[in-house]
Length: 364
Image (cartoon, rainbow, N blue to C red; front, side, top):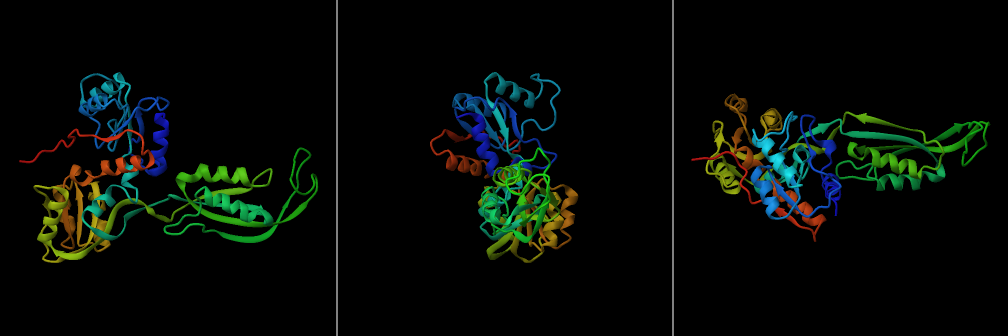
């Protein structure tokens, strides 16, 4: 199996189209056409992780965080980033980063955190906009059902908990082919009229090429009339953070104790206690100060995230409890999620969880 085949499995699960613009995801180091000897999964790619891959004879590291975040202008042993990349290149080890593709995944980083806390009725906290597209095309009436089925198979028209959704209207199409045309109905150099159906379908943007390929391969006409438009609608299946409910409301101190127990924390930081029950909880793995307002607007009783600054804690506005559990701690279950996905797709292939400690923060 080539590294590219493993990458295809990852990207079908967590498409790169949903990574944030600022991010650096995908294959960062290595050759996708190289044979893959095994996959080592980690939160961070460090020199020690590369050495672990060498010892385990695995030549693909799938890392949550990208080791190369901004451009490298040189490769010397001066920084930990450059040393790690050099070591990977010397040992023919490829490095792939998944990062915000999983941050924006409905079952991704934040959902794993929510599951650890036992939240139910979970939804995405901040759904993404501009990630849906609409296809409109025209097809002879007798071919409409078959074409729709092919477009459904390609993944079009999946909205939330529903699929096979489309809106279709009948009408009359007209065309005239020139002397070089080869229509499968009608005559060239003459006005032809055909009973047609207008098909309207919505699909997620990462399926753009797949949907168009299905359209072109299965449409009966020599020239396919179609248009694709981007929609401003929010996508409830893609976005940052998770919000859900505790099965049994807790007082604030009991909720903080729950966090320590479930996340293995010796300490955490939080805003002022408000003397209220915690029932509705929002979580966002990693740096999540940008989600405070959304959590407050959705009337969360508590917001669990990481990397809050001093002034961020004032933004609770005495409406919700803000808790900073630590960056690594909020994302620690992500690597297990990646391993589980790869083991499911590649049950007889070497996929291993890195044992290297990559949390750079220590507590005393």
